[in-house]
Image 1 (cartoon, rainbow, N blue to C red):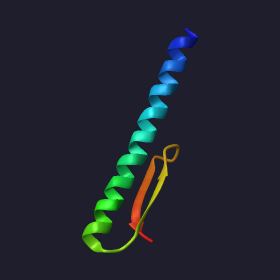
Image 2 (image 1 turned 120 degrees about the vertical axis):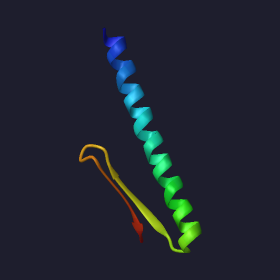
Image 3 (image 1 turned 180 degrees about the horizontal axis):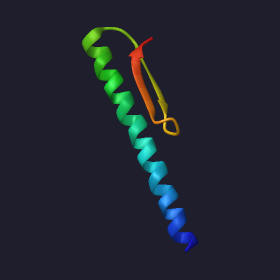
Image 4 (image 1 turned 90 degrees about the vertical axis):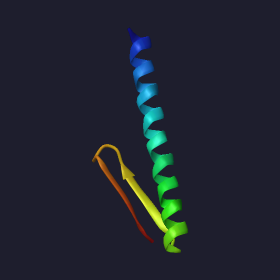
Amino acid sequence: MATDFNKTVAEAKAKGQEIEVLARILAEKMEAIHGAEFRVMLNHEARFMLISVK
């Protein structure tokens, strides 16, 4: 039972980290297109993500 919970927590954490990596990749691609530095703001608890010019 505890093993299933730990597995679920680990999977959720991995997915959250993947989202952060993908958001950073998107910001880097926007930097290449627009020539400006972008920032990533991500809050999973608030269900909020922002990619904007710094």
